[in-house]
Image (cartoon, rainbow, N blue to C red):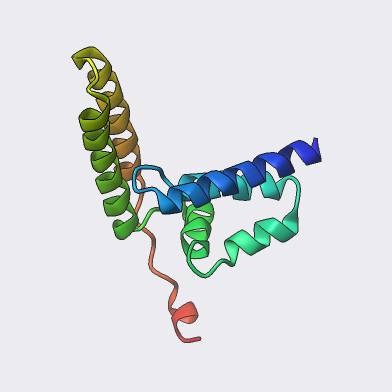
Length: 128
């Protein structure tokens, strides 16, 4: 079972890397899933993701507080809006299919926007 989690972790990392390159595909959610998979299979890779200079802070914030930064919410919502516009423009979907996809994007955006903002660091942590 450990190898299954390990393989899924690397699949999530690959999808996150693709998301970092494509504006319409998310990155952080796949890395959050990768951290979860690696937590069950490889503490070394879990730690490497949590300590990553670019993605580590957001991953730790999600793990510790279930929070998303204001900037993260803005980029996620803008990415979903852009994704829908590109879908509409490129796929020329029927209005029924476009409505289903649009409602999916709206539900996803509502979830992201409903997550709490990060709590400020305690005073002792700021002195370091």
